[in-house]
Image 1 (cartoon, rainbow, N blue to C red):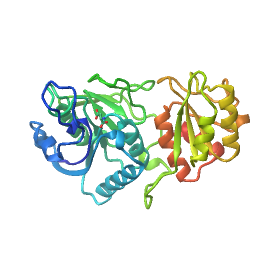
Image 2: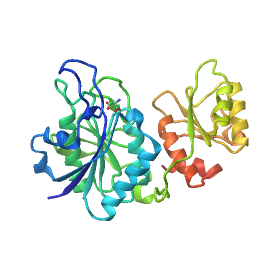
Image 3: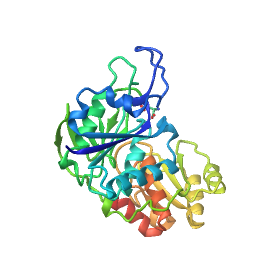
Image 4: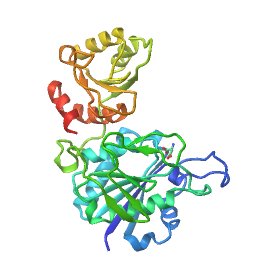
Length: 328
Ligand code: ASP
């Protein structure tokens, strides 16, 4: 049987509430063994091993945990200890962790992130079926070469494209633009496509020997946005700034001036959008060429931050940064 290793990081899938019908709960309370034992037939899908990597709500995910998680996945594959890896994770930042792994795991073997919207103790908890599907995908030879996959609520998303779109619905994830990678129904898997952009072994990114990443801040644009937020970010040591801009990555004129100053001082500035779907194009309403700014293309602000951190860690600057946003 195929060998699947589960790395449990916490999240609502391991959450414990006071009763089956109380919406309050504590994320990350249950261990990986309890999660596995709650899923009937899971040990028939693959030869399972499990490991408690962390026990955090994913709002507490950090750069150092991403680096350690990626390093662990790479070791599992390079030492041939697993044919596929499942990461159980909170849903809040699953898209960021997933995209990070998509860019730095150096293997064709599948990495599948899953989580749940309802805690493990809730009536109609969604975690067990999500875990069943995630293990099924990780054990599937056809999942190879598709990068990191997020398996939730019977849908399979490319980690590059997925984003959380509901705070509370069980159907909480969408892949705007490129759409679903596939579906999974009680372990029966269908793929619709391959990832559209460069990932895993084909990227220039590596986590080897890294224990931190450059500071990149996200600033959320709005009507009347004050420009001093940009200056504060620079003063606090940000090496990169991602703007969650209005519409096609727009900001008020005063903020644009402050961003131009920041870019002139060597801070990498990426214009993304707070809208949630659609592209941010270069030189549309903003003169990116003249001002030295980068357009995020299809990446939302939180994913732009992940890519920019990796780019800065690898010394990419200027036009190479823009190329990276088109390539990844
Ligand atoms: N706050 C939780 C987390 O991200 C939410 C969830 O898992 O659904 O860990």
